[in-house]
Length: 68
Image 1 (cartoon, one colour):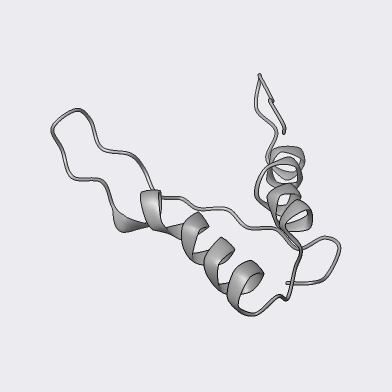
Image 2 (image 1 turned 90 degrees about the vertical axis):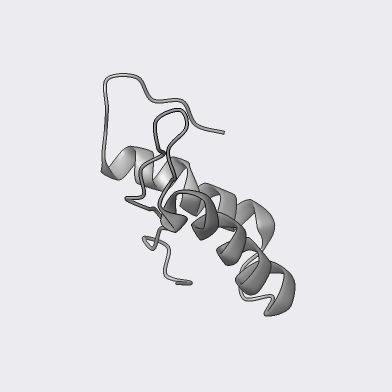
């Protein structure tokens, strides 16, 4: 998790209107932020945000990449 190449991503898909999303689609990132940043203090907020946005975007490129 602290390795420079480590990253966080999810394969949860949001549901169509009126459907029920899979819990991975809405619970992964709050769980990571709450546990590893706030409670355990293992990673800083800027580092974890990069591991959730920029690092996966570079690893799994798409046509349009928008990074924080």
